[in-house]
Image (cartoon, rainbow, N blue to C red):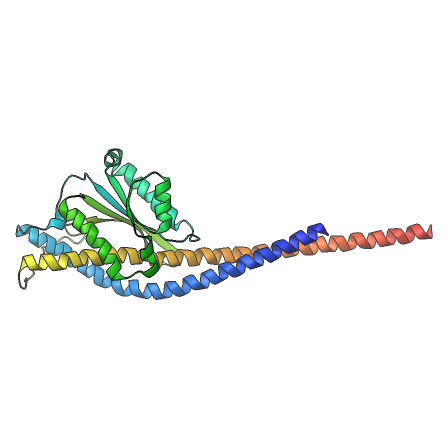
Length: 294
């Protein structure tokens, strides 16, 4: 009977866990639908603006107009922006970011890392904790950003990074985040945020766009390029936020299914143990009756 009691307690525990994972799945699904609408609307605008940014940077370079955000120099001081989440229970979502950051250090910035010139900007508590455990230099953290993600707050962070780059305090800025494809698939992405590329992407080669500047190219550079960079930064963080909710919804869905299967297995085990217990009790009664007859 003690075995039956232990199985009953375990079944009740798994049922309680299933209720939690099921509730978390529904919450993540609701957040995902809301955030997904934002990223779907933002992507076409951000991509077109980025295309204009590249063409504009190329045109300004040809016109010998100074663009501080396109400054090319030897990668001495590196800032890597790692976008993770504040909470766990989303599979390998956060661990993959840290793994990619370590790969980037080993393959691309090993000399700078050994010289102590690689710094991290952590967006998300989980990433911050994992990076700190790895002994990596964290220049700043913005964990509260994900609690109320807005363009204004994200643009403020991007503005600080851009100011550091313009002053020459940074030579290159990379962003590592999870790109949202669908609820079950997140694509680990690394993008070079600064300096701004001045050549079209592969497959899109052609004559540079001929823009008519109003009022003039310098004014356009001062307004459009910073705005475009802030939009790109916001898109990366929003993309990661949507991917996080998709990863958590998928993880909780799998956890709920596993809990359901475990409950079935435990119930079957409980019924077998109960049947064996009843059979033993019947045998004891029959044996007692036979002994009285004798």
